[in-house]
Picture (spheres, rainbow, N blue to C red):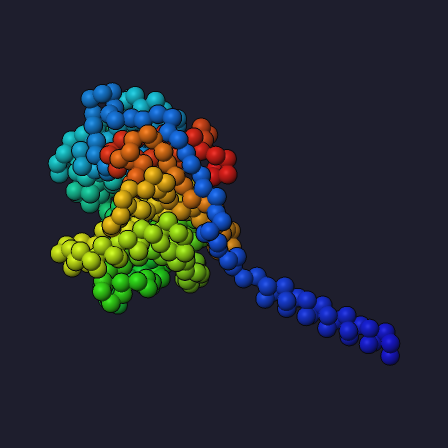
Length: 372
């Protein structure tokens, strides 16, 4: 009987150990208190292309074949530059006719064709790289049951021809994270309802920045006015986790100051949902990193010389997260250093981060290897 007892005891121990290992896989508890701060100092800045072409705080940028492709929404132009920001191609014709566009937004490339989102005409205009010669357009097919709530805060995947965005489901009257065709929004691959905890009663408004990771397997929605990140598995159509960003001291300071501002000053413009200041200014995805950019200067209080511009969260291959650090961008321009930045691009080869300050100036920062 001894061998049998020994076998049964070993089997029970193995099953217990397996169960413990299965259960002991909780998400790592995030600690914002001890996160490192990555402070980047600008090495160069650009105020205009060739000293003649200017823009406002509305630039989009992507890189292709050692060139930058840049659009300006308010100035209605597309430029192709080398990595020193010297123009090699230009297109800027405002209007609704062939070869004309307005409020150009997201940009991407497929082979040697540049696709530019045409906000005025509801299509993607195509241009030849690098001279930016117009060659045609692709009309977007709208989905009247799923209304994209923020065109500027979507994620595009030209390889799989997918669009990741937040949308209002007009049939169910709810907000959803959706995955649709890049040009055909009636082609829906995934839709997951979501709701942010804050402002639920006061603001029936759930616009979100949407980013995708690992080829669209996971999607993160970050609230405009609500300091939350919600992560989804697009295949299983499940919510994976929800992260309260006010755990981070800089985010909490900004959020609390905004609440005081709303309560004490009772500003008339805050009485309507769409007039609440955009608390989170951007959610930027680079490889496995999520950069949540926010404005620490919202609300009351004096400018902070140590202002943080972003919180960095690493998205893991299993869909969960862990803290990475804070991001501080320093330019020497006090107007930009105190406020939020818009991250335009991260260049892995040159190890540089390109961002636009609140004044409109484009800056180049060296990027540490930990964020590549």
